[in-house]
Length: 98
Image (tube, rainbow, N blue to C red; front, side, top):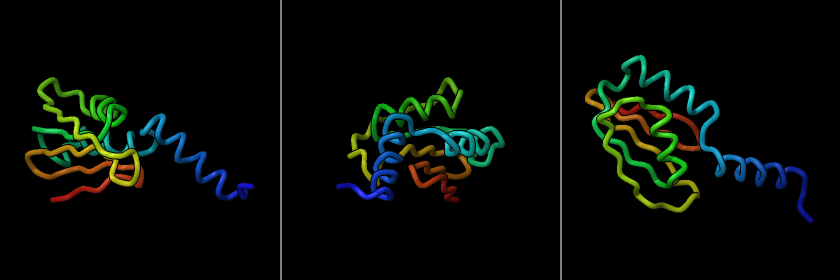
């Protein structure tokens, strides 16, 4: 028998796996459009869902992407490397690295 808390944690993870977007997408899009990382020169995505996420966040035609297969666990992410900083987006949120 699954406890209620465990059920909702698993449900949240399943929803995230289906669509890695939500608040992270809005926050990442705002950071990119505000120029917080400069011009994006490269992006790495850990799976096809994160690759779609990367294209949704960044409208730059020159976005170079690499699909770096990872488990859909804690290391699933999209990494945007810009001319001024790096933006890492995963299911925990957005991290801006100088």
